[in-house]
Image (cartoon, rainbow, N blue to C red; front, side):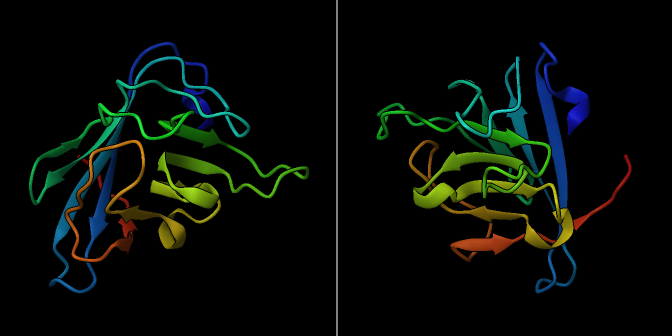
Length: 144
């Protein structure tokens, strides 16, 4: 994660999820982060051109909502390290709900056990490739 902080270009993250309940079917999800991503554990970063998506089993792009519900939208939250003065967990989150609960979360401390995808938030279009409201991701390492 630290390798792209401050990078001024666009960033595309791809995640492979191996479903434990559906015959080990692979699903591909991703985040598109639009330029100038920085540590933003206090204030969200990114803009309304950031989005997240699924590639398989179906191509879906979750764009920002046109009718902004929240006063300060949370497009991207990024923190690369544990900080003693905050209880916030390091990771990358997109879309926020109450209590710093993110729509798409990649946990920096435990990517393989604490990352998840939810079906709705206040900033992005609703929907999910999963049947559950909140799906814990079984992130696997894969090479293309």
